[in-house]
Image (cartoon, rainbow, N blue to C red; front, side, top):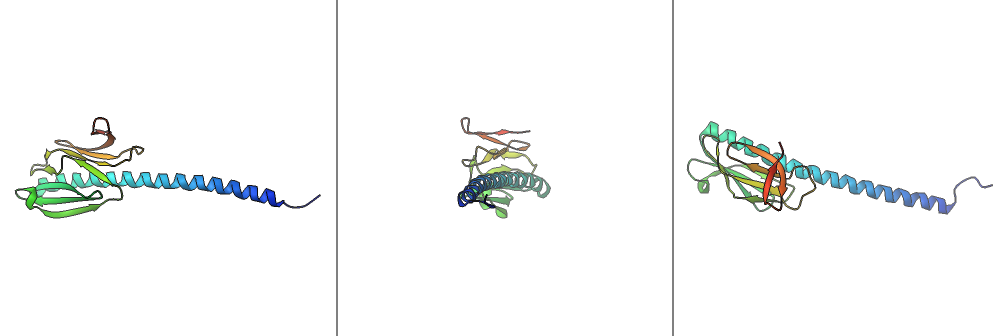
Length: 153
């Protein structure tokens, strides 16, 4: 009777470990990607909320633009978004699109140009868009059929 493992048994165990670890690594990267997308959505939400508060306190127009696919620029101005000074730039990990930009909030903290920022090709995350309505901002899930951000309250 032999004391030990044969070469076939060792190779079989190694093959099983390789398969299990590759499944685990894929799951980890998927989870990490989901967290990045949702983190970007939260950052945009907080930036728009901050923009709304600052507009009211400073009595200025604030405008949020999507520059390229991974950068949001927030400008402050007295009169027109075209002549604003950039007060914040948000670099994102995920590609985003926008509807009806720039999103503008007036001196009373009211959004006068409504719109959404939504992650491109990211349907499998909990929240993948931010929507600015007249008085509030919400996070939600992008409905590709209706082309709108459906808020999750």
